[in-house]
Picture 1 (tube, rainbow, N blue to C red):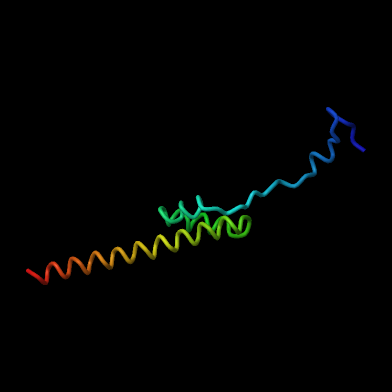
Picture 2: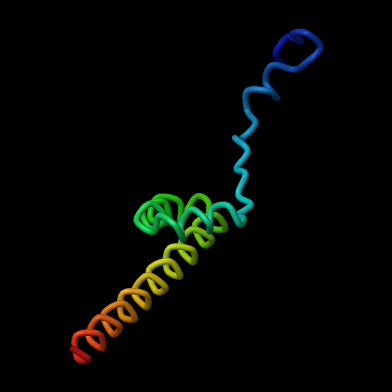
Length: 86
């Protein structure tokens, strides 16, 4: 058994696994929504080690891309209608 140092067992302190704080959350989805490429990259990196956070990022990025695409389509429809009225 290891010696006690400052009232703690050295062995028990060194053998603890790192704490994985995977809470997901609105802020990650918000980041993925406004910067979809960052959300997609972080989703790829964290999908195995932080699944809740990766899911929030992925959903935010997907929603951001879909809404961006809808705005582009609406913009082009408005332009086409404006040109047709000339």
